[in-house]
Every structure is written in C-alpha cells, then in structure tokens.
Image (cartoon, rainbow over all chains, first blue to last red):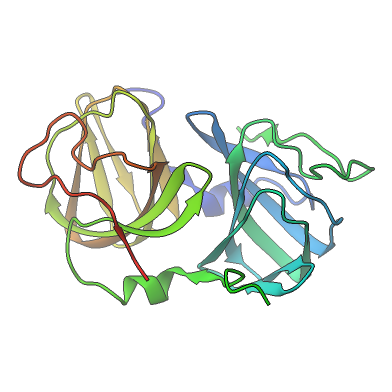
Length: 123
Length: 123
C-alpha cells in the first residue's frame, strides 16, 4: 500500500494545534495548498492581487469583511474572495477554517506587517 | 452590497439535486472549479494525466480504489489523487462529496465512455 494513500481527517488535524492565525498545510493539489487555520478576533485588511482565495468554515462562525459588504460563513459554508478585493476576516468566537489558494500566497497579501506568516506543514 | 458577496451553503446546494454521478459547480477559484456530486455504486477506472484531484466527503462514505490500495473517506476527510494515478471511486451508500480540480477536467479522465459528463453550473 502506498504510504501516501491515507485520508486526511480534518478534525484530527485541527486537534494537532491551537495557535491562532497560523495556517497549517494539510494537502497539496497541483500548485495549490489546502490549509487549516484557527481564528479568533480580527485579522488585517489586505488584498491578494494575484489570486482568488477560498474560505470554508468547519466550526464556529467567520465574517469576511469586504469594503461594501460582510459575508458571514457558518459551518459547511464557503466563499471565494476574488483577486484584488480587499478583505478582513473576523471571528467573534474561535473558528476553524479550511483555506485553498496557490502555494506561497501570504496570509496578509499586500499588507505585510506583524501578522505575516508563511504556512507551516502539519505532519 | 455586491451580488456576489453571498456564502455558498453546501447543504443547500446538495438539496437542489438528486442525480447521481453528475458534478455540479458551486464556486470558482481562479481556473479551478469547486463541485459537488452525489455518488452511489461504482464509477469507472480512469486517470487524469494532467492534474491532481481532491475529494472531500460531506456525508456517507467513499472508497477511492487505487490499484495498490483503497482509501476510505468518512465525512470530514479528504484525499488528493495524484495526477497519473489510476483510480475508481465507489460508494456503497449514497455519498455526497466536494471535488476540486481545474475547470474542464472530465469526470472520466482518459477512460471516456457513457459515464462521461461535463460539470453543470448549479444556480
């Protein structure tokens, strides 16, 4: 049996970390990364000029603030922020999400700053 | 408010169709499509030479048969079939999945045949 032929259990992966606002890579699809993160509080306003960004809520509740709207995501709901659209995620309770975007996409996009962190590989 | 600033609720989308083995597009991420499908029974053995393919089980239970292993996915579990790897999905009970792959990827890959069907856009 191939060593790589193993399912990725999202709940198991989420149980392996508690750090907030730190993306953990759990799978790779071509040149895209599937990442998990735990959020609480407000992130920073930023834009990804080069790529769309998919958010899928696993638990909790995520508000993706856009400049002209809020998109509220409950578990089992997803939203794709189009490239070039400024956004700021906010979670009033601790929230677990799945993210999908090209490998190397920085969490803070064009904004930089102290919250900037590369995705980590979760074993 | 942007008309496009609306969450995609996966359960709602799944309630909108009952057809088996028919991929329904619910979101677009760059040149990738996020699709839903309902499966029961066995598909056909096939390979995607040009792309990896992500399967995430929402409900039910999916067995992704590979030539040297079976990968069994329960709800909340995902697996990426690497490009070039022959596989055949099988669901012994009705199973709902989320699929992610580049737009235009055919469901039957290189195999063709009567099960071949382009993804449909779910309103």
